[in-house]
Length: 440
Ligand code: UDX
Image (cartoon, rainbow, N blue to C red; front, top):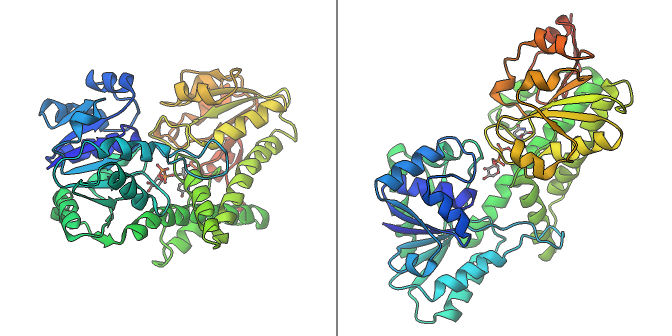
């Protein structure tokens, strides 16, 4: 199968590479020449575990190539995937900016030859695939094509394994011919009995938003319950374990923390709210999840301030982790982007370390942040340490050493990595999230 992937961002690059690993011949196209040059030199523009090895292997075996030339990449393709960015619109109104998708549709339209399935891979509002269809039809009335929607559910940091062992694949199609072609593309997954859910195009488009909104609601729910645990003296870890054992609830995405971030949940919840408004409908639970998430980040600032005795002014705070989650260098919508400046505005100095995210962090955080080489250097002379992102590197810290390096033994664990009682016994003043119970 010949596949063209338009867009070499996170989704396009991972998807294109994994398709080549399936044995398909894949051409990845991007307008940014510098990005394509880097990829052709074997440099991967993002940090994603396992991706470089897979790109190298498939390039060497001749199944994967990168180009800026769309007009040579589209003719002869059985399927053209559109995986360009859909950033939040610059108007700041929560709508997704679809101009890159429509531009791609226009450009590819005149290059089609022979039957081709044009697949939306980017997360797009309901109705976008139809719009792509109209654009292509208008530009090239004789073209033989179908459109389809094939949303991705990849988690950053685990994208390769999510792609290779997905819970399901969702395909929104209207013609049997397109369905067969997409099923053939995903054939290697039949061997591991991955369910393929075939739906209408609109259903597939909405499925992605519904999945992300549900997960965002689940996180905001457990964050609120964590706050209740703090108020009543209960422990959210035991509580989450107990409710998660109910098969109807499930144990995943019940980890309280500083609020969700990343490229998907914040953007997609906002976009869903805007989509439903246009249809005169409501998603009140989603609206509440968004509000709760903003409040959770603000609450973390207060938690840190309270631990410092009511004022952060004049204190140095050590941040371990800056990215929105571990195993990525992505800083988009990371809670650290709002928490750190809020503390600095009130007179705190910040030292910080992140295993992969420091270069990205510099683009998002005030320039006065002092970046360090490791966790211990970060904690040296600080008044408190905040464990912001649960990187493996921070899961087995030499806690005695940390305590001695700190000016005050204050440990604020926003990911509940450590046990409150052990921390107390080690001499720390410790706060987690939702750890209200402190038995002897
Ligand atoms: C998410 C979806 O999981 C994925 O299916 C979709 O395609 C893109 O968006 P991603 O943003 O990479 O993936 O990360 P994810 O692991 O889902 O975490 C998102 C955020 O939620 C992170 O900030 C994480 O720290 C937070 N989170 C997650 C929690 O606070 N608690 C949890 O229990 C789970």
